Length: 153
Image 1: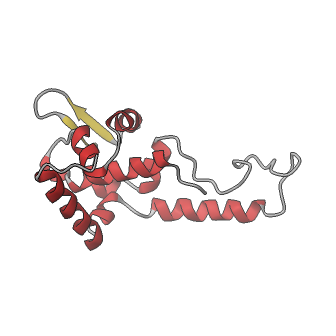
Image 2: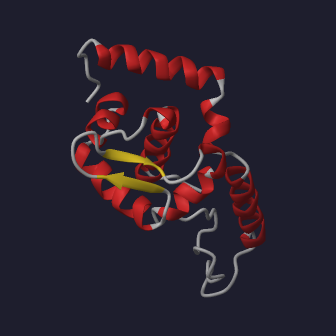
């Protein structure tokens, strides 16, 4: 399974929101600056995340985005699926036509791997990630960097 940039950026942006969960709405510009992700790319991702009910938006002064539920209730797998990423290690995309329109010799191996990856990512919530010391350390460094006006974007 190859996780694309789209999937990585979506999880990163959602984790940024989870870190700032108790501070109210966060603008996409703030996420872009902290995470080094293009603002226009974030706009596309957040449109999908909002349609899937994972984030909510607030317009006007003080507006931005916030998680639609507690970080503990959002799994990494949900984020990846919400932006139309596939958690699939098979060559055929699960269609069982990997070798001359039939299943290849290793189809079931890759299918099993896909299921394990799905289970693994379903078992990790944003809340768990936020509480990891290494995530806290990186978040603090990013916050300090953007507070002094140095942007990674």
